[in-house]
Image 1 (cartoon, rainbow, N blue to C red):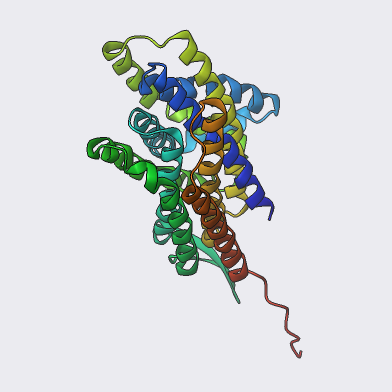
Image 2 (image 1 turned 90 degrees about the horizontal axis):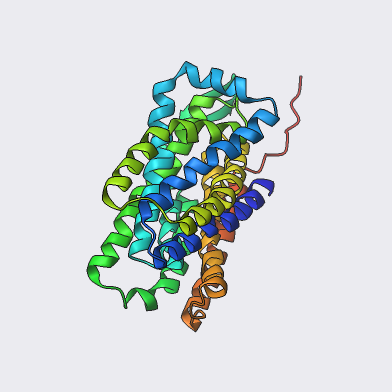
Length: 323
């Protein structure tokens, strides 16, 4: 239950991303700076936390072992995740992006066969290729039905071009985030805590953000003071708090792919929090009856997904064995 609660709290703080990115877009800020500034702010914030805990040296030692993998999977997990998310803010409202983002639940489940999980046998633990959690995937489909109901009325008002530009980048991000996260868990092998891993991935993804910033300076100019401030808020709420909570949740179920998919399913709550944030902060219209039905279906699907995943892994009662 604790990993699931951590996942829900991370979803709350992740929702700030969608609301504030939309606010920056409406005020004329570029998605390039919304994306890169967040990670620039995260470096000093996380350095203070990790160094204060006395864990900086051990992080650097682990990063030196496989620098190529750190660079690759951090760029995938952070760069190819967040840049597309910010890009879509130019074409869709925050709550719609948050809703579309829930396809990561399906994406995460589809990635299971590309990883190995620990399975207990009579001779100890062995590595076995993961299998797609069919029951969990079915529950994930219920979540997506809820998301669809929340979006359907508003999606009909969006032009075809904007619709595709708001969907395709999120599809890319939905695979990149769990892929990068899981690959880095394999590289770290449980030796780093969540703070260390987030800092390490942030540092390793810096070449990507620097290149994107250079492109931004040339094509859109420097960011405004307002965008810098709002990007700082996103860095604290989403980049540090939410990411660390989510990584703590996924780390606690590392090696159990079905439970990992369940934790990732808690991110469906982002659409609820993002919708509430836009209504309160950006004076967006209140949800329609159909949208409220979608919320109920979404939460029911999330509960069923988590329940099925946990039931699959309830330990059996030990049997009495005659000696």
